[in-house]
Structures are given as structure tokens and as C-alpha cells.
Image (cartoon, rainbow, N blue to C red; front, side, top):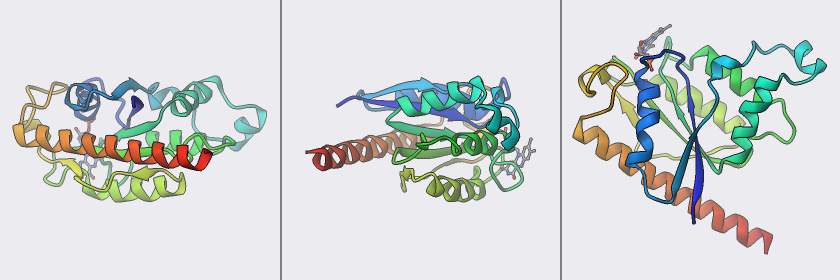
Length: 192
Ligand code: FNR
């Protein structure tokens, strides 16, 4: 079975290491995963309930529609001050106000990279908590926290070249594919 996987990036930076990893995932993944990229989280306005009450902005709907169309979601994001970048949290907050919630019952995973030694590990557990609230079923292992990322690529905004990291990412994507298949089979069985 083929599965549509949407990549959501938490950095707006042109030479973002995380965005670069997001662009590289397709070549490291099993053939049955078909990748696309969500609109930038930077296109969404700041969450404001007054704006919501006047009607969801079209940028929010475009982002939410991409999520609804996907079977799987991969969040590729840096860590800011031990937590989730505000722009990413803002986008999640917007989508969480739609009914039905587009995130509900999706399969997903988290990938992070940073210049620090532990690659965004502290952020991952904050994001994981938020994604539990969205009822996303997340890959547990292998965790992908790419530390000292600047030493593992062919340049800022470039590709990961470190073989160990590439193997870990490949295994992570295999596990995502396995969870997607399990979830798909479970949903089919419930529908029958
Ligand atoms: C950072 N950075 C950072 N790194 C980290 O490992 N832990 C942290 O808590 C933080 N905090 C932090 C806050 C803010 C506001 C910025 C701008 C940066 C450094 C960060 O990992 C580094 O800039 C990455 O290169 C950002 O990811 P992208 O943009 O390359 O994907």
C-alpha cells in the first residue's frame, strides 16, 4: 500500500538544516512512502480567536487541507530554548481549532537537528506532548536527534552525509511505514 506523507518544518530559515533534512527524506525512505511538503508555517497569521470567529484564514485552511490529505506527518524542526519553535506551535494551535481536527488519528514522527550535542532532544518531548493532544500516533524509535549537525552535512542547508545518521533516518522511516501499514489494516478491519 502507498501512503502519503506530509513534511512539516519548524524553521523558516532559508539554509535551515531541518528543512534540508526534510527535503532529503524521500531518498532515504521505503518506496511506498510518497512525500509532499506542507506550506511554510510562516504563512499562518498569529492565532487569535477573534480572527477565527470571523472565519478561518485561507492560509490556515491551505495548511490544514495538506494535513487532512496525508496519511502520515513528519515534523522536522529545530529546538528553540529547550522547546518547540513558536511558529510551529502557532500552526498546530490553529489546526487544532478545526472540526474535525485534521491531526486526529494520523500516524506521525518527529525529527530534529541542531548544532548542540543532543540534537533537540528536549524539544522532542515537548512536541510529543502536544501531539498526544492531537491524537497522533508517533514513532517511538529509533529517535532521530541529529546533534552537531554542522559536522554531518555537505554544508549549511545541504544534505546529511554522515553514514550513521543516514542509517538511523532510514530505519526511522521504515518504522513509520510499518506503523502506517498497521494503522491502515486496523482502520480497514474496523470499517468491515
Ligand atoms: C536556538 N538553538 C538551539 N539549539 C539547541 O540545541 N537547543 C536550544 O535550546 C536552542 N535554542 C535556540 C533558540 C533560538 C531562538 C534560536 C534561533 C536557536 C540553535 C539552533 O539549534 C540552530 O540555530 C539550528 O541551526 C536551527 O535549526 P535550522 O534553522 O538550521 O533548521
